[in-house]
Image 1: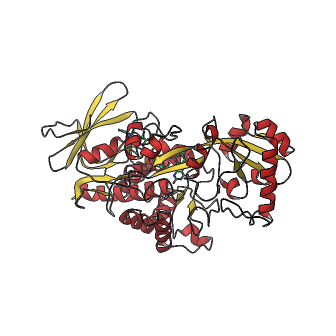
Image 2: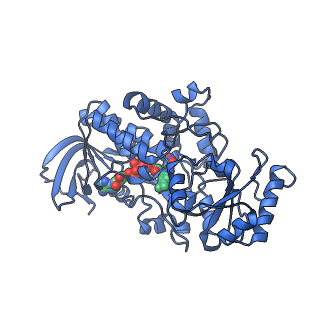
Image 3: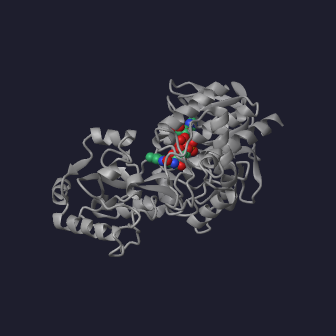
Length: 469
Ligand SMILES: Cc1cc2nc3c(=O)[nH]c(=O)nc-3n(C[C@H](O)[C@H](O)[C@H](O)COP(=O)(O)OP(=O)(O)OC[C@H]3O[C@@H](n4cnc5c(N)ncnc54)[C@H](O)[C@@H]3O)c2cc1C
């Protein structure tokens, strides 16, 4: 199944705008199309929309928002654009980078004011991983579940027709790439064909398609430690349809890794405590990286350690930063957090050499006092030393989300190799080329959702315009 060029399709019904995939990108696309007055059909393969959006921590980076201004944070699209280009060493797609830098702030304001999405600035990530100011907008619980639930509620209130259990498996198009409609497979085996004037692809990336990962990200896809932790629906269908329709691809080797996934629970460990002074050691009891250099590339640093394991070591002060979060509470209730009064007792609990862990912690204390220099380049002097009883969480690294995809213009229209737009095909979120340049280390934290909601909104507005024309 893929793209069918048969020109004699009879459709069961017609909708001006069809959006495929009800994650953050699809829901914002549908909201924007509704706001522009279009009738929208949003199709989701799962019985209840989850996607990577629900699995995420729900943060989206955006510059120049009202929320930032209320908190006295000076930020704007130029600063954001410069941060994107610096993080990616100039390799980010300049059109998408500019589009996200210019429009993410307005998108957050629009979602807050018009659709009551409860964004706020609830963590302070200025100066970490490439954001020069705090522009991390999240929902109160700091979970993607809450963000996703709020977007679904807003879509229902706005009159979006959301059909779940509806797997799109074929796109009908003319020879010039004009999309005429899609075919839906229902869970009961039923099949429907829907005609449309504009099609928005928001099926996300290809992390769940190991064949595509091997092809486009061979350094990770063929590594013995390969591990994916995103939604199984991110199997690259939308990207493949876009290519069959004539679309060009950008930055296909880019991906978001994460270096703190609780093992074997598959639950995210919030990185705040590492950013504020916790450390990660391997099973030899030794640090092996600057834990705060790059949260995405830290995934590879951990996966290259013995058994692909890193133990995050923290104290009560660092634990207090995250202990009220749902993920941490779940980990604690599962017995994942090991606690001991001394370094030797903790080493025995987590089965690492006691003398090595003691040496590591002694070194960290000296690092916080500025007596020695970190061999990996981390600055410990801005945090108080780890003290009192100690805790440990076993973690590993994983690929969370691919960042390459269909090339789009500033209105989220899918582009051909020659730079001209396809007639009525749009893409957003993980289906589109993101702002992460190449490889694993161009990912700015919260760029995934920033791209999803920004390109989603632009795609919805453009689709509504095309449908009305
Ligand atoms: C564990 C984890 C944590 C993360 N944390 C963050 C974070 O805090 N901040 C951030 O910016 N990014 C984060 N990310 C990345 C972020 O989740 C994604 O960038 C974002 O959710 C992408 O949104 P989307 O709408 O493109 O995709 P999704 O949310 O995956 O939605 C795509 C939807 O399309 C549906 N679909 C697929 N194919 C079809 C089809 N053929 N027919 C019908 N429906 C289909 C899928 O079922 C899915 O519901 C995280 C990712 C993971 C995995």
